[in-house]
Image (tube, rainbow, N blue to C red; front, side, top):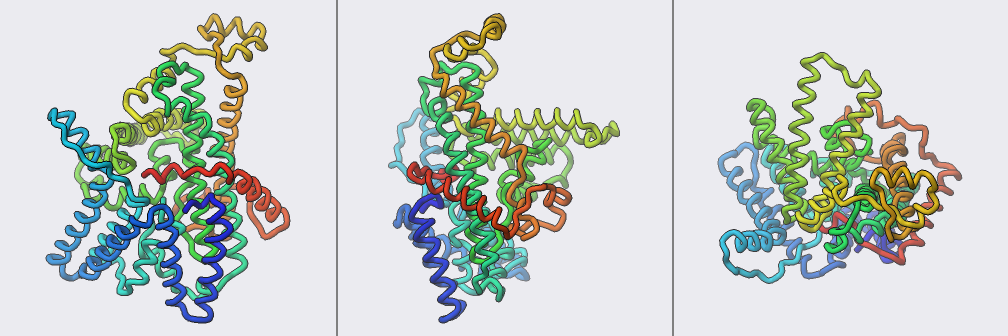
Length: 519
């Protein structure tokens, strides 16, 4: 079931809230939590009920293994940990990578092996990582769960089930036991609904509008062959902001839904396109995935404790596997390799600046230059993230570099006067493209840029009401409340929320899935 659907907004969510709080009050806490688990399973099974069986199998196996992970018995418990990780990665590997592996094996060996099309179960990447983190935390003695119902709730709580955030057991389950969470609070409803409608607006109004300018280039191989400089940049910038507002909007809607139940989810986005380095970008983009890759992959590989060369290799491998986690395709491998390379260069550059005694934060022009380089690097990588094939990604990159020429719609050129003559000297020609589509493309890109780069994020707007969980107290210190736009219990904000919600609901006639559902 989609957050951006009539069924969810007007039926599932209000009915679940009502039944949950009524059952907690009149029947008991455990009954209410059980009802929430059933509602979450219904939410998951709405897409394809068959995969609910796989989901429940995964939950049952991981719960059982977690119970055998006794911290003071490292010998036997490590065996169970290895078994658990193998089972989780085995399921993920089969459903997500089996066809990819067989296709590449056939290509290399000249064989013709064939698998029936394996369909990817919804959210398998997210609930797999979440349960692996639970097993590791249980093995290390950081968390325990003796109640199967509570464990089910930890895994399948519907606001964060489909596309995250990827949560830890120790940061989620204790919240459900708090007295103030088990009672409905108008403040939670007000904050939750406001955040949800902001996320809905991001998704349905901004992201879905930008998507109109992405598909014609990226989803049509023939069109990609003829794409010019402006069309390539327009489409790629549209995707850059579409992806941000789509996934950021989903995360906001998840945070809003959870808050209506009195639950705080971890922050997953913190204005990543404001980053002035790729290191900072990965501290701000998909934060819970970055945390997982750091804690359970990068550190397991040795982190930065085995010398500089090994550290850089660990960074590259982590991002390479992070790219492969997003999808079974060489385009995702290239995307991960690019970001791994970026991180290696960024770390080396920081070290060089430290040795030289240069303090970049003291120079505004240098900070702007760093932001531009970082943003261009991110855009370049997004081309491969979105392109269906390496060939198409390469074609679009070449077009962005000007190898396919540059065209402006003839209708626009005709109105430019002497400017058109200057552009002609630079090699810009008049084409047959739609002028209204061209203008619409870059106007929506401008809207996306203003929203992502200039405006505060939800965590900042609602800072005084603690809308999210931070990894530690120092996270984003100094910028959490760095905004003049602050939400409050007022008619002004009630009107703004109602307006954003109305615009979001009016666009539900053209329902589209969230981009991260494919991962």
